[in-house]
Amino acid sequence: MGIGGISVGSLLIVLVIVMLLFGTKRLRNIGGDLGGALSGFRKAIKETDEVQEGLALDAVQQPAAQRESQQRA
Image (cartoon, rainbow, N blue to C red; front, side, top):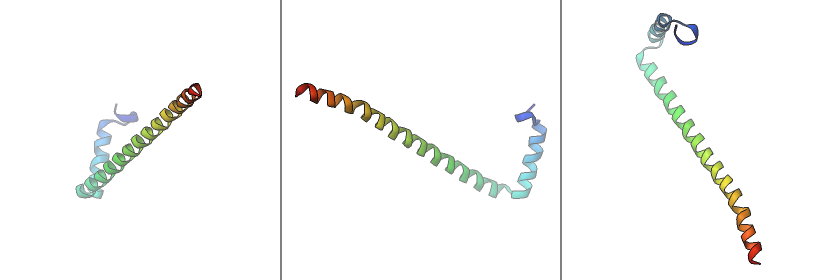
């Protein structure tokens, strides 16, 4: 049993047909483009998470700073 109920033999046949239709050079280009897109997506997700963490820290630190300034006054 392979992926999702498809046997390994069936997957190999599909792979051979795809290689015959598109050629190895085009498949390499598609793979490189897909890899670059996934890399950019992961980078954007990581940056978004970092920004959200920074905003969360600011939200936590800001009330603490306000309490300290009120206690001094």
